[in-house]
Image 1 (cartoon, rainbow, N blue to C red):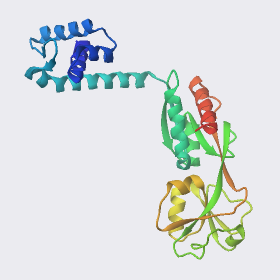
Image 2: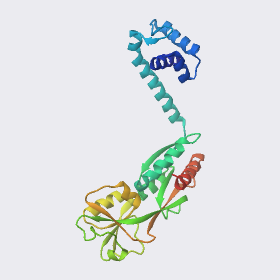
Image 3: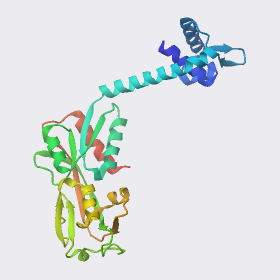
Image 4: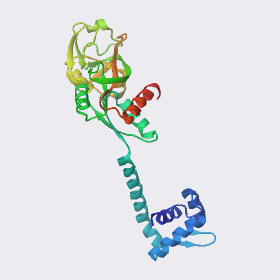
Length: 278
């Protein structure tokens, strides 16, 4: 009966048996027979047909919304069934690299067979704990990762701006050099900045969002990668270009050596592909 209803909706949309048949990949006689079977089964005449014209009857117009909803529900059923049967990867990642995580998920969803990805934003501490407990399949971690994990697909993010609060003496500067940081408090999510002057204050768990709130509150300055600069718009913070040389953040994909699966290896490949292409 579902096929007959699909033919009914197709003809109603095109008001043509031949065009509906082309859309459905069927022959015109097969579509006509399907509609006739539906009319006999329901006892309702759905179309008025002449040699030159096809149009819905009043009864056909009344039934069409029900047909559309039924077909939509059937499509949702099929989609959900496919989602429930495909392999699923749980990936923890720092929010800073959200666009990369989304690109990885799209790649895995588009492969054959498809692999679903459940993304879990998490800082280094939370992601490492989830990986240890087996709650996630893999995690993108700031390096060095804990020695108990296997790592691959290492990549770097350059740090080329400095987040400065409103009213700070460096707010109006066109560029900032490392020497300008002498005596300043430098916020750093999860690690200290090697080679920079200033007094470090570590913000736990790779949380750049919390670090920016501290900047706005006047608690310190934050060396910031371009990824974050493009994503954040705040009136209480200015991102000043920062001549920091080779200052960068390094991340890698990490997983437990006891939980290697074909889906995990597909994830490793998807991360590597995503890093090399856009």
